[in-house]
Image: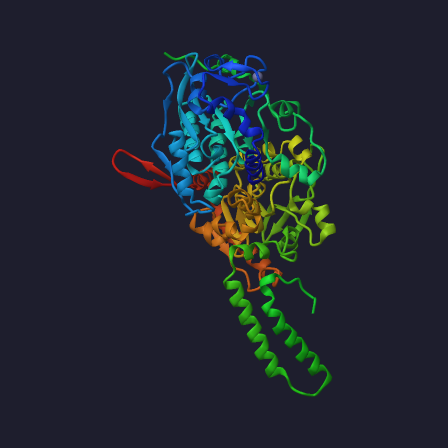
Length: 291
Length: 329
Ligand SMILES: [Zn+2]
């Protein structure tokens, strides 16, 4: 939560890990881009055709929620839910800038109302309730709208007996909504308890970065927990931990691979195999195709 | 004079207390009757204290909430719990000292109590990890809550933590997972749960034992999504703006009552609960018994339904329908 978000901002200011993922490839508008990881010059269309994964080194560039949905859902099957929900400013929060202004700016920049898209789709003709967080919207932070949309989706999945996938990408709680933000963790977890009680399959997909309050709630509550290669996944921020310990942390600390090593991730799924893997898992868990 | 730990904003009281002390000493050495003077000064001091504590800013409340002599989980247990037996361990290799629990009796009822435990001084705080629990602590809490569920013991949780422990081992052992599972499983439990923020409620570390049928807070306790220091560093880019952040984050019992997060704010004497710990114990015991009276009469399905609805209603969104718009919970 606060600590990891703090790290995220601190690192972003220094232009470190979070920024480097997408900016170099997304922001220049030429036909060619350079892989931030290996330096390979790539043809933009090739990169997109490969799910924004570098064909040379396998680096996963950040993608937005629309791109993610098109990688998962069968063509033209995604039907968005609760698109009418928009954020408010319940605390009248103002730091150096007013929360209301930050919201308007994020909305203008992304075309989204808030940081998550929810809906129902098909994956190889099998139904799936799908939520995709969008890191571009205030760092994927979890406010009331994110919490409410995910909760409604989980409830719909429970009543319609659908499997559920939540693609996580978040710096943690949205501080500008104060305790209402923290309580979204409990609210979503409660809805997931009912989905679980109904013996339905829930899988979170942890993408770069999944930290703080999201890690301490729905990201870690999957029947099966999936992650993208090298994604940063953690509860507390690296900087805070380094300060506490005054010693160097392992190189792969808080990566998807590190979490798998310690038993918290079931399987790491390269993005190019995401749809196939999801379809296989759904099939193995008895999800039937629909017309 | 250094007999008690003074907070910055209590300093105006020092001069008065000094005078009172001097007069008392004077009275000891002479025959002069000073009772009238003493009474006057003591009344004045009490009045000033009341004024100061009635007007505490959120940042000052944090200081009261973190006061080293504020009653802790074990203090409350000692005050109102009979037949208390502490139960140890998560059954997976650890027994966290920052999050403790056990069984005991409040009045006629057997209950399970769990709570964060801070220390009073540096040595105790090191042993208690300053009230910051590890994944093992949250798993111990869940093991005990499951036990309560099996034997139909109501669960009383006492929240007092700056946050869950942030460390290499905590990450390795799945701090996020441990808290997450508690959030989910507390919705499953079939017994009444009453959570009270007795000091600081620090974010996910507090919520990890905070999913309850009733959430109570003491008047000078605080409950935060992020520590004001961290929030100020991020949003103001200046840690010195922590007091502004504390005000903006809406962390007091009164604020959280308004936002629908908290069910009841328990009064404290002027000076805070550290000023009158026995009174605090009495207030909390009564509140717990009162809420248990209401909750134990509910059928299990109703209890769980209400708990779900309580959290389901939290948050504020604008729902734009075709026919105008309205705010829903
Ligand atoms: Zn590359």
